[in-house]
Length: 459
Image 1 (cartoon, helix red, strand yellow):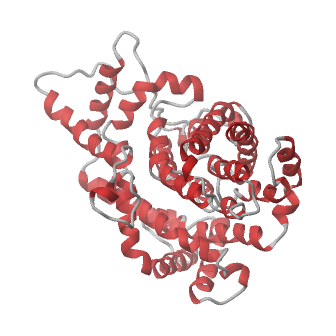
Image 2 (tube, rainbow, N blue to C red):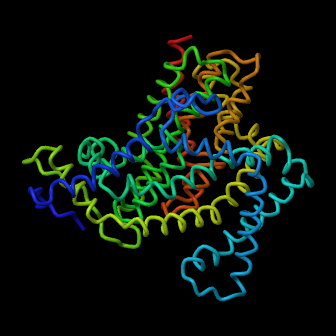
Image 3 (tube, helix red, strand yellow):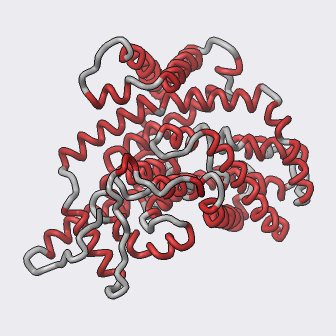
């Protein structure tokens, strides 16, 4: 299905219909894309000095609920498991509740595992590899960010999705994105929301657009694993952890360069290349059509205004927001805790990552990376969590060039089971765990081949 291309502005409809597009989209632009120095504006030292609006609101929520997060998580995760068990024996007539509670055995199992882990972590009893400061407590520590960002985004996403903002951006750069990365131009909004806000936010936008017919299966998968980048604010945390803030510009240049090369190569290689260009449940495909006869700006405005006229009412936005948040909390939060704790337990309490990193040692030595043997496990452990690699190489025994390479690599690897990986697997985006492992390994090799030469030129 395509938007009407003959939609025109007339004196009778121009102002009101333009404002219906312009005002919500402008608000969406400031909330999801344009970073502002909120910390300085409000003289607040406990928030990031520069952030997008959604990120700033999320940080305010985190500051206010921080002490209550363990209890909130306990209620959400244990409640999810108990209600899901109950749904197997009780007939739930409400279609929405039945869909999120009456799940397949695989998902039910991990909701129960998440509940068991959460009880252990909350009451501080059980095996050390579950409740340790390096495993369960780490995952509990990222929960405030997830709870806050999902709460805010659940209500505010329509500002960028339903009022024409993505149609406008998509039209402006559609040919550029399609030619280079095989995705529609609107993917730029997903990317900017990830880059300036949070990677899970970008995946949420991608999944919603995919289900609405704006992306095909292949396009949604490409965007999820090529453009859902770690946020700029978190990248500064990694650089600071490694003592590289004095080189942050060059550090982030290496991240961007490697991510760009990955985005050019990955869509054309397995497993992304095998995914079909079909829509979700065969919904009509909202194709981006660019007319060479008319200017891009005019076409962008026409499409955006037409989209805004189809936007849902405020009441519908609020109801859908509550549904989205409830779905995410019940479905995703338990999985993040379960999978994240298991992943970190394997990394911290078993030699698995040391064993499987032997081939990486050879690659690092070929690339003349100092401390290759000690740094190799940090290369692969990034699959579990984005922050662990920088922690592993932050000691005095590691050369600065090695810290630079591992830190930049950990950001550009993009697939982390404690965050983006879990969100992708629980979404409707057609990627399985096997696919994510393969993509992670390919991204790792490509990123190393790009980042390491840059590092050698600097050190």
